[in-house]
Image (cartoon, rainbow, N blue to C red; front, side, top):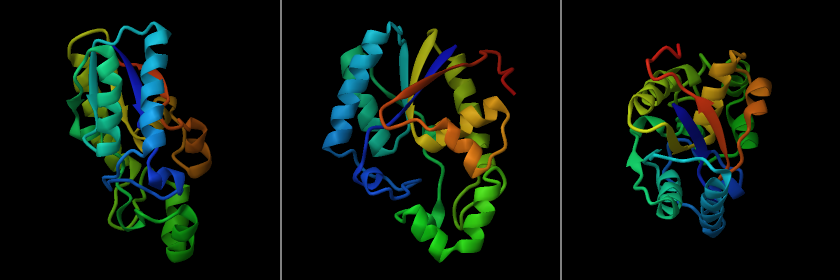
Length: 193
């Protein structure tokens, strides 16, 4: 199965470089325009999208609704595609986190796979829900699925597929801007792990 992992459109917190994580923020006007543009780019790409899944977070689900209007689809909520939880760091910028939680932040920067923000989840924790969600999508109908989700989800999947260390420098190679997508091939038999 071909899965197109698309990041939601911009929110005010994205524009202010605030960590969103599990916080349920809305798209701003620019984000809605980005979602419209995403739908046009997907149509122009020639991808035949059979089904659309979306994180239930408002910013992702609204992006999916906008895109699906153009594709003649209805987005299906997929709880386990929600963004990685950043716990008490949510609402802060990375600079504020570094200032307020320097030891925890340094440990997180060195190994995001095992280290979680206070009250949040590590990327290892997140992958334990994200990978089965992608297995379920791959086992579903069609040949190509759109999954509208979040940058942390996409980085975690791409880093896991590439087998790279889960440190700050390596993971940011997998940056996907708002309302952009990457395609991954996912084995329908669950042989991805």
